[in-house]
Structures are given as structure tokens and as C-alpha cells.
Length: 299
Image 1 (cartoon, rainbow, N blue to C red):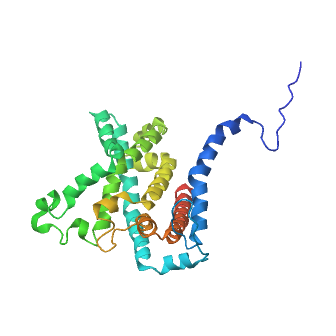
Image 2: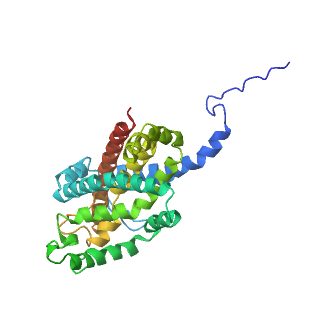
Image 3: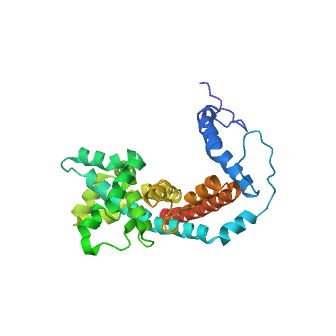
């Protein structure tokens, strides 16, 4: 009887070198799309950087932490970070609650289940400009919602109200992205053993109790993913305030850090300052994501 020799493990390639062939394209993608631009942004944030014509030789002096000091001392920038915090406090819990609840309902044997699944997913794949136009028609000063509310309509109206503008945007983004997160939960629900629901029913558990004790713990990994994705996409909010509130109005009440980055970096030519805003935003999102992951994955 012959013995097969164990495969030698290369210190560089590992025991299965073929794995590198599958991993390399994704690593190249990450480096080209994420790591390299992030490195350039970090470099720009330490200089008085501005864009110039290709081939032009211009002086971009080193300013150290001056851009970061300006970020933390600028009221408009601090307001934009507060706005995105308000947005996330509304958007993330609402996204988790609605997507999990609707996914649980759509996972059951209900009439027209396929129709409802497609209906919730359509806004996600629809162009943002088209969907924003519908919401602007609903929530503008002379829109359908105000016409229905009559004297109960807020004054100033929704999108020009410094208190209501960001909550309206948060609800809009929640509605638009709901279909994607419903699909994530639907996939997770397929992995929850049906025997657990049967055992809960035998023990006399109601539907609500089965949902709390079986469904919620069973889809916890999906909940972690939904929270992380909602936080990251929400922190990069740009299109909705740019179109719905005419660039972050009223008076910056709905401006997001990414929108301010565009205004300062592209429209006003302060690229180094905009890069510093971006780095601060990245660090903040990383911290929030790590905290959320620790809280959601703990036993």
C-alpha cells in the first residue's frame, strides 16, 4: 500500500496556489477602485490642492493638518455631519424593521407573492432622477401630500423646512432601497430551519413570539450585513439632497458631507479641503460600522 505524500506548503503561495488565481482579480479591483483613490485622497488632504489643466505645472504647497482643522471649524461641514447622523438614525432602523417585516410576509404563502416581490424591487432599479421627480411632485409646496392635508400641511413645506427636509429624504431613501434589503432577508430566511417554527407552534408560541425568538435570531448575520450596507450607502448620500432640496437646502439643513465635498472640491476648486472631508467621513463610517458589528454579533 503506497502512501501519498502530503502536499508541501509554499511560504508564499500556500497549500493551494490555484486559489491566488481566483483571488487576484478581486484584489486588483479593490486596489484600483478603492485603495488607490483613497491613498490619493489622503495625499491631497495634506496639500493646498486644486485641479489644473493636464500637463500644467502648478504649485500645491504642503499645509499639513490645516485642511483637517478647517473641516472641524467650519459650521457648514459640521452641520452636514449632523445631517447625515440624523439621516442614519432614521434610515437604518427603518430599513431593518421594514425589510425584515416585509421579507417575512413575502416568505409566507400569500396570494400574488411574486407580484409583490417584484413591486418592492422596482424602485431600487429605477433611475434616481425619475423617482426623485415623483417625490418632488408629492412633497413640494403645491404637491399632492399638502393638497390632501390641507390646513394640516407643514409651513414651510416639507422640502423647504429645515426640520423636516432630512427626515423626508431619509424616508425616501428607505423606500427606494427597500427592495434590495428585502431580497437579502428573503435569502437568509431560506436558511432558518422550519423545524424551529414547528417546535415553537407546538409550545404554543404566537406568530409574534415565533418572529422574535426564531426569525430574528435566525437572520442575525443578514441583519449585520443590512446595517453595514445601509450605513455605508447612507453616509454616501448625494443624489437625493442634490435634486430634492436644490443642493442641500434650506440653508444647508439637508446637505450631506459628500454633497459638500462636491460643492467645495468641484464647484469651488478646493480639492484638498474636500479630500480632508472625505477622509474624516471614511474614518467615521469605519468606526460606526465596527461598533454596529460588535453590537450585532455579540452573544
